[in-house]
Image 1 (cartoon, protein in one colour):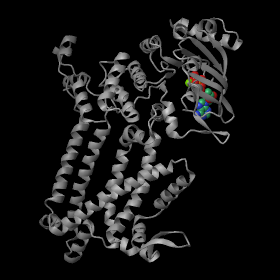
Image 2 (cartoon, helix red, strand yellow):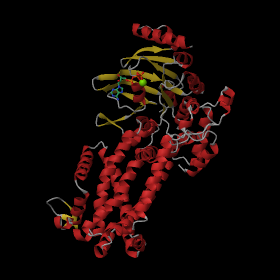
Image 3 (cartoon, rainbow over the protein chains, first blue to last red):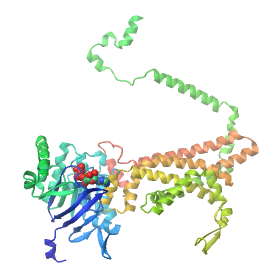
Image 4 (cartoon, chains in turn cyan, green):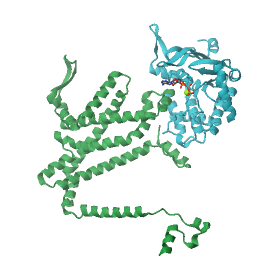
Length: 267
Length: 314
Ligand SMILES: Nc1ncnc2c1ncn2[C@@H]1O[C@H](COP(=O)(O)OP(=O)(O)OP(=O)(O)O)[C@@H](O)[C@H]1O
Ligand SMILES: [Mg+2]
């Protein structure tokens, strides 16, 4: 691939992606381009398929239709005899490494300290020596403002600190895209800003991020693009100002009116 | 009398009525009637037990102590320990493999695992031991080959199955089935987020189980596993049916000769108590080892944390 096509090809492309749970179309024919260095916020009512869409990107959910392309190459499937088959698990794991994921409930490893949580994957997956992994671990923990909490276990940290460790854990694998699934929804209101602050810092550094969030103020400030989903489909897509204040569909107007008043009351 | 009664009820002598006086009083644990009664009962029971065990000639403690460290008993005890260790080792490995098969995506493996667990649950261990020991009568030669067709390599079954190996095989496949369900229960109890975190970090399943899921599930299943392993101590006495001499069999052959039944059984009980204590001590150590991160440590002890981290080479 020449450098020329690389600059014009989006980092990540979804083409007609669908994910069904039985009869339910949790993600329904979604197409999407993500350019390198962009911040995309996924919003929408509960059950609209935001988490499922996010999880199809890093192959946590198998897709039923469509395809995902990373740097122009199809991931998750390969062509064989005129069909597509899922790639071997070892290949899938390699492809997963392009993505780092941050979960709503942190999912830290409770029996490891913050530093161990951050260093274990570089050691086990990338085969780094302990010392090299710890160097990276210290750096990313400093980056999320937890340089003084490295030797604490998750249950000795506040929710906001735990989520920042989780972000550091994802960063330590040096992924090309960061995926966040409602990273602040499980946090007390006063802890939300410290996590959003870290994410803002990552955006300023040029990280490519896809964020499922209900924090509309944050989306407006940080996102390059806001995507609204409803019933598994994208119903609005564009710059945050247009989408949040001037949505074209009645469904979106209703949704943003409800969350708009909510965040107005909070702030 | 009546003034004393009222004073007791309010608990306030006349000179201690001001709030300042009250606040200055020391706080002691409440020592109520239940405490006294329970202590009384404990003393009574203690004395009764001393009378029962020490001042009752019929226990014949001299006989007990003359046998406790004797050569035959020691041999039996070593056989028990040996059998328990090997059975635990092979049984738990078998259990892990079975649990893995039971949760496999391959339907054949799952079915095998379920059938195996079903059979072992139905089968009394005594029967199991006898079937293994007399396997030679059922199948005179063991070999690898094609069913109903030729076989490529053969050995006489009785060369493979001794009393010892029959005991190990019989008890291991038993423990294997039981521990498989314990392992599976532990895996089911893990939060799904842990699996997702491992997957999102690209951890291969084996490493994920070894370093992340395994330690967490061991923490949960230690009490049940310890139960099963301690049960094995005593189940080893079943191997007397196939003539393997461990602790209890040894004791039985001795009292069959000299009729000192109770003292010799006491010898066995004392050693079982010792073995159980060791196992429970090991259990406590394991629980502590795998409990890290789950108990809140002292707030100001980053030093202890560092020491822990240094000890635990990931
Ligand atoms: N594993 C699953 N099995 C069956 N149905 C599922 C599964 N996961 C999600 N769904 C369904 O798919 C739909 C989309 O779910 P999803 O979690 O993606 O919604 P969401 O937009 O993230 O909602 P929320 O804001 O509440 O997190 C929902 O109707 C949900 O019930
Ligand atoms: Mg969701």
